Image 1 (cartoon, rainbow, N blue to C red):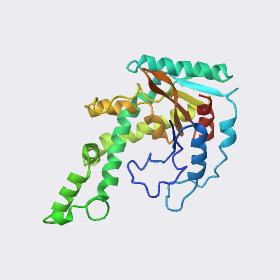
Image 2: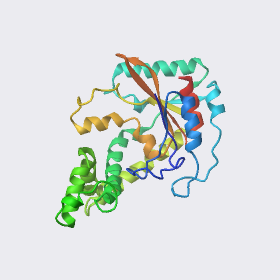
Image 3: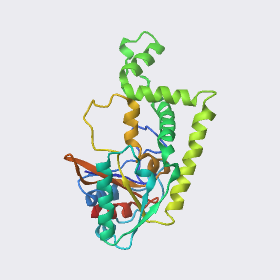
Image 4: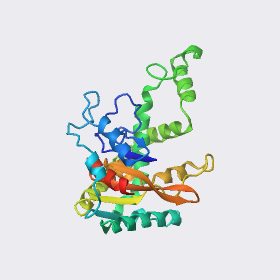
Length: 285
């Protein structure tokens, strides 16, 4: 399965429940990179119903997918190969990079030193925006409502939100409300936004040297449902995909082999609005 996250603003979010407004962007899940390109072609473009969409011409992605990677400059960031990840997964990613080199791509080692802060930054910004976006699901305006069994307005809110949200939305609402509260806004949210800006600048500098970045998509392969009880360990699974999301960059995950009969995900990250470039590399993997 291939999953593409396009550039922030490339596709309309109209009709989608908002989670993190500053990172949300719909993209296709498909069997191949060519299929993903076909779907992305259709869903891309400006939408007057979504002010975050960009008025920018949508190119034909098909020639990109069909072209070769010879001469392409591929960056490999050291910070994405952490000691905590499954080493068998790391080896599969390195084999994939070697295969791209054999096809004529130039491999360049690069550094994104603030990548290690992407996880805490994301899990400050995201809960903050979740707590705001999900405030409308109060039993009055949108979604499930417990009005018929409530005694007063406060009871509607409590019962609707208590039963309508699962544990993870509740956890994020509580964390986000705390972060945005008086006395903590400057200490957490403002600082997180400053680090986000630094992460964005680092990507801009790296993309002056390379065309795409190739990294692992996750630290390991898929785990069984219910195995991980600790929410923090679940959040750590996102560690490699968060920085491109924070920077609004296009990224694609493509399978690049098996470890213990489970697929390994290879992530290709591109500069803004370079979906064709990331799908080109994905199609060769």
